[in-house]
Image 1 (tube, one colour):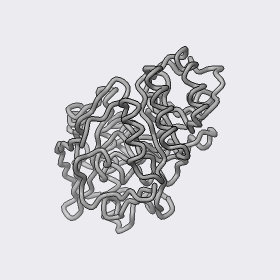
Image 2 (cartoon, rainbow, N blue to C red):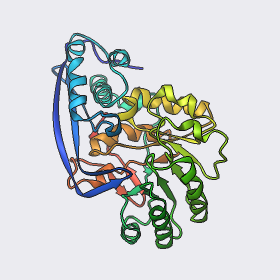
Image 3 (cartoon, rainbow, N blue to C red):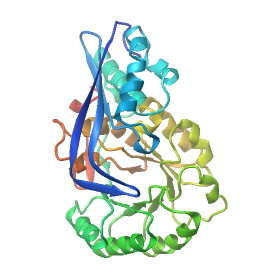
Length: 335
């Protein structure tokens, strides 16, 4: 694995805000914009960059990420490397920003793409879900008809059992042949989950993401899982992976959670060893946020990299969504 040239570095941090084209609702939250921390590392000749959104449910907001990244600025400018980041910062948005900026810088310094430095095959287009924010069932059914007919559909639930059942039934009626996965975003208890599961089976839902709150994973012990359960909030970092076995079937890797591409790739490889399937997701952001996750997606069974589709504007160049696939031009990041 390559590291950056040992030259003096400078670190620039700034905040950029990208509004959504309409409010986005999940269990317990409504979002109208994404505030992004942009990190740029320069050796005087090359600049590596990345952007991150953080992890809202952990208090990892824009102020926290700026403070964390600023805290290690001196160490980085005095010679700390990407490998040192694993000890300098905990998993989270700030470490992701710096980790991926280092990867981008290394690619430019060595004239080799990140995928090659990371020991991956050349990236290919990936089938990516498109997400429907929680809304009235009829609104979500209409939205399901309006998106790319070739794309898998991810449905946000709220934890309101009656409304969620109506949402799932309406979307399946509108899209009888679509792959549909649902994301409860920690909205259920073990009791209400028991009532939801038969509906999901009847509607041929392919997977259920994060049904219970983080910290309640033991409630799943002994529960028969009639469809794959996906760990998201229950799977923050590499340290969580072993505890998922027997409770979940899939681990959802998000670079803002685990702290960068370095750990994201490690989670994907370890999850396989434990017999878990692997998914890659995102915490929203522009195409610059999607590009490192796109490389993780090359190792994944399920890909959910639709963050830019919620934004009123994206960066140029941007990722392309077409025929149910995401394509990430090399010019965005990592070349």
